[in-house]
Image 1 (cartoon, rainbow, N blue to C red):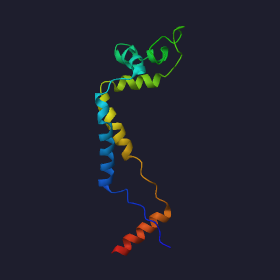
Image 2: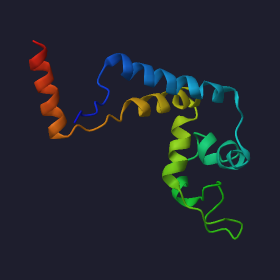
Image 3: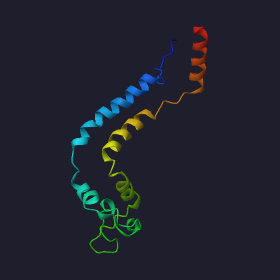
Image 4: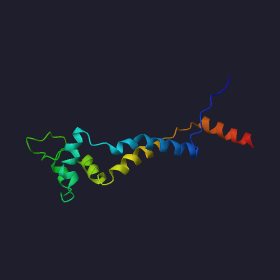
Length: 127
């Protein structure tokens, strides 16, 4: 019975090609505008766009920048998301490219002990 071989994903060339392809796929997002919800959550949200607003505002406002105690508030409370928007708004384009590229290079298939032993045996047989 012939064993099925799995490709060696540890090759640095494969590693970088996958990362480059992930970046290429997302390049077209650089010229895109924000979507409907982003206008309210990012563009008109003072917690995101105004560095003069204190960080404590993240805990007093909802996702859309409204006072959380207001009757007009949707009560969607996401202070960490708003903080992330504020921190990344200056480098938005770089983040859009780097995140998918880095994420695509992170996962590597785990090797089972049998696979490791088989690889070691094949390397020894090659010599």
